[in-house]
Image (cartoon, rainbow, N blue to C red; front, side):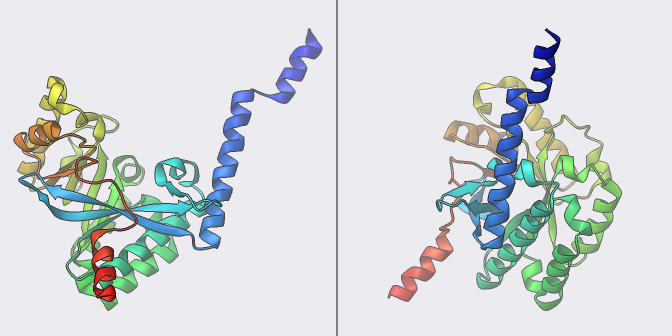
Length: 275
């Protein structure tokens, strides 16, 4: 009996081993993609609630290619690499790609995800500061998205960072708001320009009275603080209509377009070249 238990402890839990092996493989895949520059942005429109045919801006979402050439979305790797050097490098690449996209498309407004760890990362800060100095008009069309859990890790650092860059025209969005059922007091402590409400409160909201009350309250309070609101994970016309009625300014979700690596402006440029 003793030997059998000892052997089981040596081998460890099969599920833990499988998860660890998968995570190592994921990190290796991301490192390879970074090394070979197989990294890109996928763009998803954020539309006006009052006129869903008009994009207010786009979100640039980081993607990597695996060894077979498949496009891998961030949800499949970011949680594993977020606190690693590879995660910091991905933040840098996302910012570089976003700034390049803005520079080549003068009418575009674009949001790029970042984490609080980027603020102290020299390469990321050098990239941002250089863009602000060289092309202030590009900076004015840039929105930096910080998730609520990330912002709350070092709130004082994030607040100082926002104050400095908002003065230069850069806007900030609080992503995944209420993902942890956070207190409304953060409306007072942070001066975000945009509030993106977590999808758990907006998906299938047309048939969920409780979420209608909660999401409506968030939209109403944000409006009192002059904060622009975005409802995420909108997947039906019925939900879009409900969210517009509740007072949301913009909507984001598959009802208006999935993230794509071939955005409209790239297609338009290709058509002009062909002509």
